[in-house]
Image 1 (cartoon, one colour):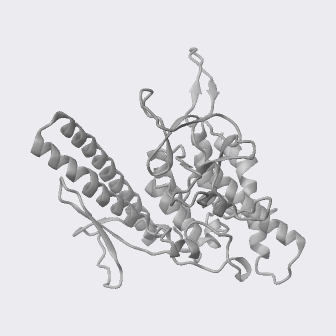
Image 2 (cartoon, one colour):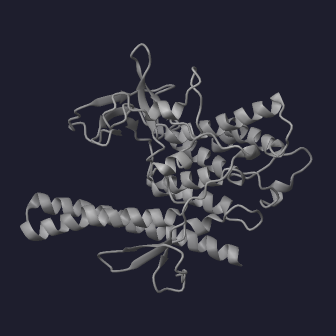
Image 3 (cartoon, one colour):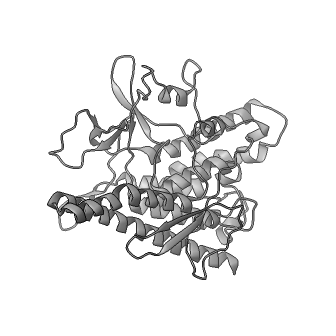
Length: 385
């Protein structure tokens, strides 16, 4: 299924980018070049739309203006929104099967579509007439999106690997007739029918009350997609055969005092996190984003983390490892430690139940930190050989 999806659907999104890649240095502006440029941005926005897709169901609006799917049918939503199937709505995340002995698939879930989109964003493959080099040597071409879009892609995958969707969620909006639908947030800015910016329209505060009037909606996402985001980025973006940054440097996490640890110079900020139950300290370098000029020395269309976003404090560090440790540190300070103290002090059943949930959340984070550390270490060793 994924091979057919890549070959028949997603490959064309990045193939036009590769056509434009060969002509982008030309000073000669022709309508065909401009068409390729527009198609290139539409292609990467389509892949982003797949990743952002929510799952059908009932969503509850949180105090942070984000719709999250209802976890319990008995949960009371002060403001609910139902996502259906179709364009501008959602897609089921999981597969569904018949119950017969020789079972068949009723539906193939959006999980594989998202996985294929992640793979396509990191792919550097090229297919050319009479040139089959890529079939035998993955180093033959350097044609991935990262070659041109370093800052946007590294910030985006820092979010995917961390499982943090701030800045990349779709919005719930209404049209002129009052019908509500899900409008994806473009990866690179698009133009509305009146020529205005789609990103500014989705982020605007119509009532000037300090909150955005187009609520965000959480995409369908799981731990396994975080693992695959890390795995594909490490596999396809860690190469000494081009000038793109090696991604294993961005995902670096080490245990303090072990052979895998690095003695960083004073100029490098290091994010640390200490497991409160084992006292093991993890370290990761903080690699800040480096904004670049766009194609043909023009700025890229607006994206989350561009110069305007940075001035507003809306950006991500390139280093996914440091972001993961920072989130774990925040969880311990704001959830785990207060819950532990409340349980030890009061002994109340509800307080101790909250502590058990916080402890489970801590174990999830520690397990993921170790998984990232081991993935990265294996990639690091393979490229050092």
